[in-house]
Amino acid sequence: MGRFHLCLLTTAVLVALLTSPQTARAQSANGKELYRNNCKVCHDKGSPHGQYSPMTLTQDQWRSFFKMKLIPAHKSAVHPKTGGKLLEQLTPDQIKAIQRFAIDHAADSEQPATCG
Ligand code: HEC
Image 1 (cartoon, rainbow, N blue to C red):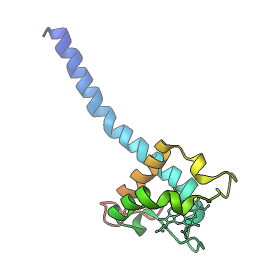
Image 2 (image 1 turned 135 degrees about the vertical axis):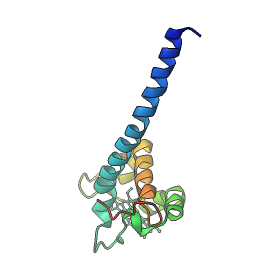
Image 3 (image 1 turned 30 degrees about the vertical axis):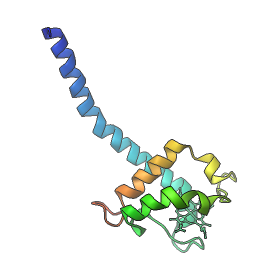
Image 4 (image 1 turned 90 degrees about the vertical axis):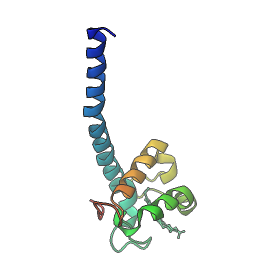
């Protein structure tokens, strides 16, 4: 391997190291925003649908919620602001970002969070 290639490789590794935490951070900021706009709207304090923030549930409870309950529990949920069906408005990537945020800030996570 020539010096040039080694240099390229080093740069690539550095770039990967430097950008990945940032991407994760951006994603979790995004998840927080998405949670606020799409979940908190119906699950804020005093909500008749129940109050849920990331720290209401543990990481395992969130995992099983996203796997088994999100869709059946929200099939007929209509977003209060847009008037569209919640589940049709969220892309799979957005749901993933919300899930990440909820799990990262669950009751038994390192940084439990009420919603933000
Ligand atoms: C349109 C209002 C609305 C929105 C938006 C909404 N929910 Fe709900 N959610 C409900 C209702 C209504 C129920 C109760 C469903 C039931 O009784 O089966 C519920 C139930 C739940 C439950 C309890 C499920 C169970 O059976 O244990 C959780 C957790 C939850 N929602 C989280 C979320 C998350 C996370 C989001 C954002 C992705 C969200 N909700 C968005 C209305 C909403």
